[in-house]
Image (cartoon, rainbow, N blue to C red; front, side, top):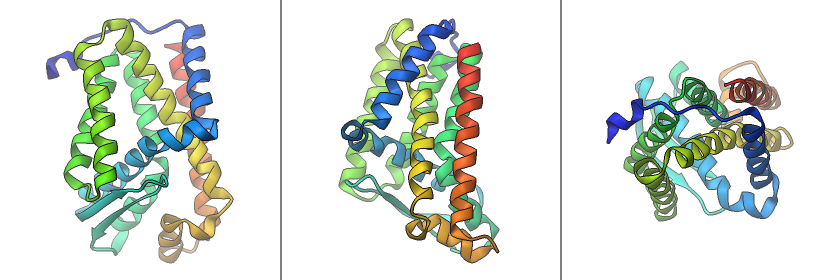
Length: 224
């Protein structure tokens, strides 16, 4: 089945891409819907912490995804540049993933977007330590698997675009929220303690990064 990740599909016309983006924006910015789907963004956020932690030599102790949309990643050691990198990548994790997905779509690798998502969910399933988080990961993973395994080319393409727009737009939505309350953002507190920059500066950097990713990723998707 993994061989399917190398299959190619034709990108959608710009009008259809924009329509999918608008539908995703409704899901992300309508509060009732966001309360449901924001857990998927949290998984990607914590997944960025996990991957950065592993790559910088940290041991991942536990990951949680909470019912209120929050989450946490506990790793050791909690010192050094690697820990700072792991703290930084969380709030740009979804946006960076969206850019990668947009790049794959631009080359026709729609199915690869879904399989990469499945890979992340598999890693997270090993590290998650609370029941609700496990349910979220299994649900999202099952949905992606069913589409990747049994979906038609048209369905796979539409879902790949939808997932990519979700990553780009949800990353920006979350960053907009943290700018208004930097004092309670744990990652900003960690980075402020390790550097000369205040917490609100880190939040502004995250916001700028997610907006830039949305603009670049959107341009790639509509020009594909």
